Image 1: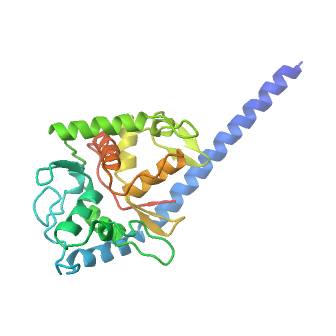
Image 2: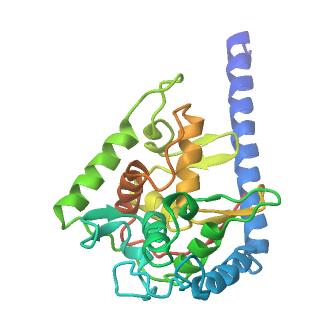
Image 3: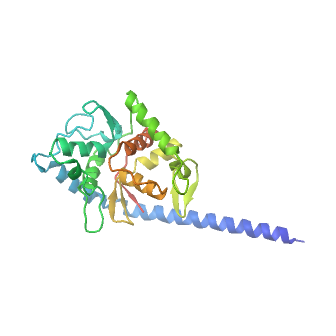
Length: 268
């Protein structure tokens, strides 16, 4: 005879199983949706506009960005993103892609610091040149393996600073990046949360940014992704192209070494 306790346990097991199946089914459907759109990723439009902006002579100096050096020589973009962030001797600091791009807009094109970071993120009726440029620059490294170095002392320091920021708990919710991204199998609603401490997860996550967000109708860069994470932690919003964001990016990028870069990708 089945007792009441057995019925309760069975009901609980069925409910848990049903929830897991529902989550799995939803995840599968999202994956199918991404696959259907993959061949027509709207990010390609951002890449095309970015290439045009890259070659356009503008700013007070009326020059293009074609001499911008991302570490492999002036104007060389192939494989550059897979080695960023990195140490740059000309500024004696570690920079990520967006920080270096801002630097080039100032030093080459003659823009003021305020003008160089104006509208870093697009919105309805407001296009961002930076998101387009980042789309183009990163796409030039598609299919190449991540190979971020920490050979230079400042690169090692940036990595360690990024690691500390990743684990730092604070804000009104006492959250850290690690709260969501340091264990396998976690999710928020239907959103899978990659474990950045797991090399395979770190590679899969990092190598698909920047990405076209279907829900926002915009390409979002790594700096936008990190800024949004800080917002969700209820932290103060970091300054665009700040050293803090570069440090966190260094931690994420180094952990993704060996992964094949596949961005700009497609996200929900």
